[in-house]
Amino acid sequence: MPMQPLTVETLSAGYGQAAILRGLNLTVPTGRITAIVGANACGKSTLLRCMSRLLKPEQGQVLLDGRAIHRTPPRELARRLGLLPQTPLAPGGITVADLVSHGRHPHKGLLARWSAEDDRAVARALTATRTDTLADRDLDALSGGQRQRVWIAMALAQETDVLLLDEPTTYLDINHQIEVLDLLVDLNRDRQTTIVMVLHDLNLAARYADTLVAMKNGAIHAAGPPQEVLTEATVEQAFGLPCRIIPDPTSGKPMVLPLGRHNTTESSAA
Amino acid sequence: MSDIALSAAMTLARSRHRRLLWLGVAVLVLAGAGVLSVSLGTRDVDWRDIVAGATGTTDTLARAVVAVRVPRTVMAALAGAALGLAGAVMQGVTRNPLADPGILGVNAGAAMAVVIGMAWFGMATLTGYIWAAIAGAALTAAFVYAIGSVGRGGATPLKLALAGTATMVATSSFTTAIILPRNDIAGGVQAWQVGGVGGASFDVIAPCLPFLAVGAALSLMSARSLNLLALGDDAAAALGARVAWARAGAALGAVLLCGAATAACGPLIFVGLVVPHLCRLLVGADYRWLLPFSALLGAALLIGTDVLARLLARPSELDVGIVTAFVGAPVFIWIVRQRRVREL
Image 1 (cartoon, each protein chain N blue to C red):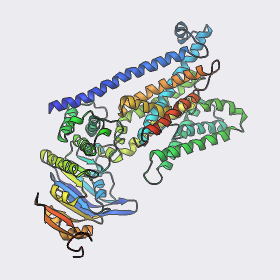
Image 2 (cartoon, helix red, strand yellow):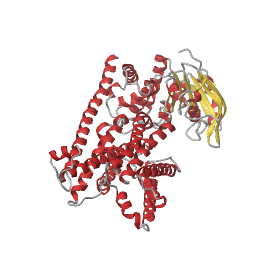
Image 3 (cartoon, each protein chain N blue to C red):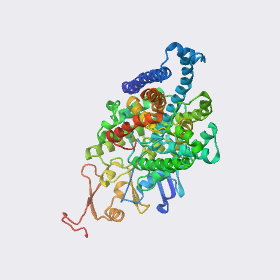
Image 4 (cartoon, rainbow over the protein chains, first blue to last red):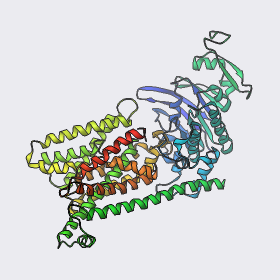
């Protein structure tokens, strides 16, 4: 996996007239886990969409291996870079095995038949996500946590060096959130997959990411190891939320305790 | 590890075997419908006459009847296959369980274009009808999709069905308005407009074939793209699909199929809606199976309803378009009520 990192260069993008990202620069560390955090509408998802070719930048570019991804043929890019959207749609009546096998699409030519290697890749993805026992179940019949593991399995079957995830823990119970994030760490360690995810929960982001990227108003406010990024000042500036930061007793990573107007012994104006 | 590879492969193989079984059943059903269609009708004939009539002998009345029924059956098979396939493609392209060349107004638009051609431009050849029908179908499809996409949430199933139905009513009314003052063409147009395969001959079928072939090829080639589009545009793009091109190619295939079928048989509705849903129950959501199945069972359904149309009103016969509407309407209601009307 000798490659130049995923790099965002002076990227500006938006929808129609409204520019959401303005001249943004970012280098994603190869083989690490990066979490993008920020308040609603700060441009997190827009950045992820640009990084995965779903949205065309107005200015600037995104480079993978020194090549602009918007000028890479889609199927070729899809063999290098995968994306799990926030709310993918499940076709009615599809089985887990059938859904996961869609992940092999970029590896097959127009007329290529399903190969033994495709079978092995699907099996690896099912094993890694512990969905192998669900293989012939109907996707509609699964719980939210199981379903999310199946979607991740589909992205794994794609066998890309880089995997982007847009809020992979949304709508999940806390136990399933941890399950999904643990799974991503396994993936990162076992396959050295570079992972970039948008996360809402700052504490989980600090615990699971090697690099935190805090965004504000379409620009990067701070980026670096969680210990450096997650400070009381940064959280207050990026989210407009006063808080205390303490070391997470289970991981030693920084942990955010928000100060609201009620039910705290110190006032939020402190 | 290899055990799991094996079990995943077996899961995929099992569903493959089940689908192959259903494929055999579908072929048998189609063959049975074909035989019934040639032998039953206002006058029943036995198998000796069928063999003789099919080889072109018309020396007895029964054999002459067969010689008429064979092209009629072929026409019903082609139109049914075209509409079943087009319906499945439209449901995939729009991710809409209610999509159907009839409900989305595409066939009515094709029909309006044909009637305009007849009434205002003196068009009288089938090839002319086909081109007019395809142009009408394409314009209506683009119009309905544009109207249905306006506003929040894009082209939701409900908005598309409403836009399509409104367009169907509007174009049908306009078509009627064109025909009413024109006694000279009214009779011919009326029989054509209800939808029928009764007058089919190989002279009618031949000019449709190239359009049907290209439409079918484009549609079947879209199967993998439609599988990806079913996961949502973002997921499809992330898996390497060119979303806009995939949609346009598949839609063009469906429009060619609808245009040619409408030019030959008039605007038939519900075939494209009913058949893909039935096939989904049998072979699942994979378009690589769903598309050929929809073509096979579409053909069988239209042949079957044509036989029914002949038997119901003996010694006269009904136009098949009337019977498909009667068969299709309850299924439409069933889909709306039974399955949550959601994006496919």
